Length: 258
Image 1: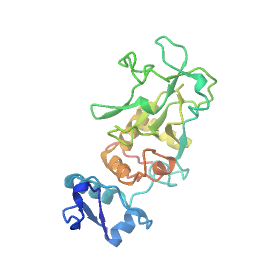
Image 2: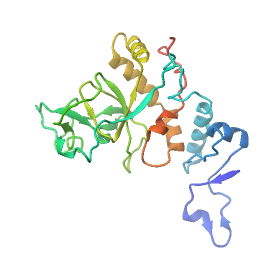
Image 3: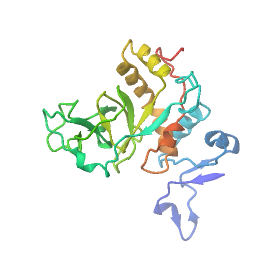
Image 4: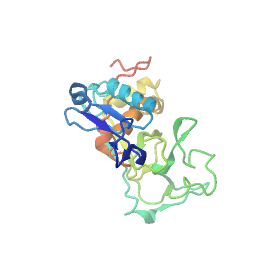
């Protein structure tokens, strides 16, 4: 099958219909089935031919890899699935407890999707509780403190924005969330078994934070970003999409050997 798109007005005319030069991709039955686990979904492709080639190559590298939530993959060899959770606070229902950040505040940092930013090509957490460069009036200062009860999980977490803005240059934005923060429901985070946490601490030289920072680099890789953009259905990075992310073993000196 041949899939055409994305198309512009110049690709279609009343005289000839679809132009032969329109962007297209040949979907061969064997590779297509492997890409989609026989669901026959069609990847979203960029219009530039070079970028289209990068998408096809990335899909080819990742399609047969285990998924993030699969039991017994390299990250969770004890058989306990990695769980994807939505941030614990519904921002609409609990808005009266969410306020703007004031320097010197004793309130709890509230993390939402706007706090995941890309700086110099790297994803980082841009919240005034942890970053002195957040300017007065910046969007990251608004709706960034929590003054209600906190029943958040203890310890640092690894989280990803769940709702994309119209100008987002990245779909996957993973960052380490320090202990003591509250997450809004515009953020997803990963929940690990104790065995995986122990392994991350070991890989971080005794520090879970360092281990999670390494894992962030894996999840923020170019191939996974390309995959997510190709198969993402809309501007929401939902739990199912994260659970279904391919999860190849990293090819560096920090690869797990549990």
